[in-house]
Amino acid sequence: MPAKRVAVLGLALLGPLVWGWGASPLAAMAGSAGREASTTPTLGAAMEPSTAEQLALVEHLKRSGVLFYGAWWCPACFKQKNLFGQQAGNQLPYVECEKTESQRERCQRDRIEAYPTWVKGGDRLEGVQTLDKLGQWSGFQK
Image 1 (tube, one colour):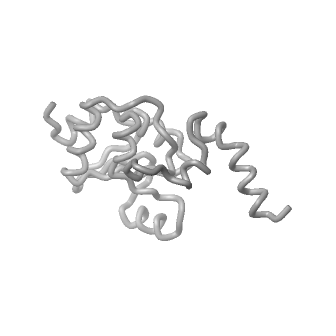
Image 2 (image 1 turned 180 degrees about the horizontal axis):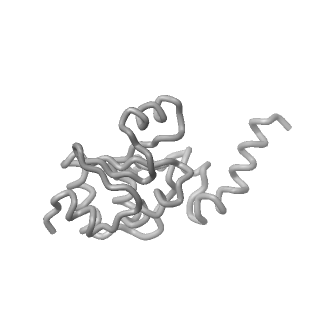
Image 3 (image 1 turned 180 degrees about the vertical axis):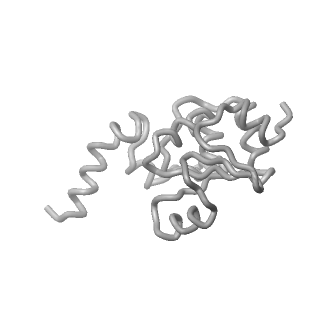
């Protein structure tokens, strides 16, 4: 069997273990008609629907120029995304640092040393942050 076919078969078989039972890498690659594309597809799918407050916080973070740096293999990054729920987690202002050489170079230039890292101007937070902490840090008004 050609190597490419083995790799795809492996993804199909391992997908539920790696990505969660509701999403496989093949489904993620195929995309979904009628839904907005995720800004965080490399982190997997969040488990629960987003609340209005989670959605409002993500909109505020994007308007404020906040960036969330992470890596596709980082369990803490998935945990961070999951705190926002499905819809908001898919719209985070995310920068992937580990899939390509240009992504690695960007994150090195931006002096990212830990995942996840949140950056707003010259301020940064490292590690998984609660939504309350992110809201306070970024000036979010509920």
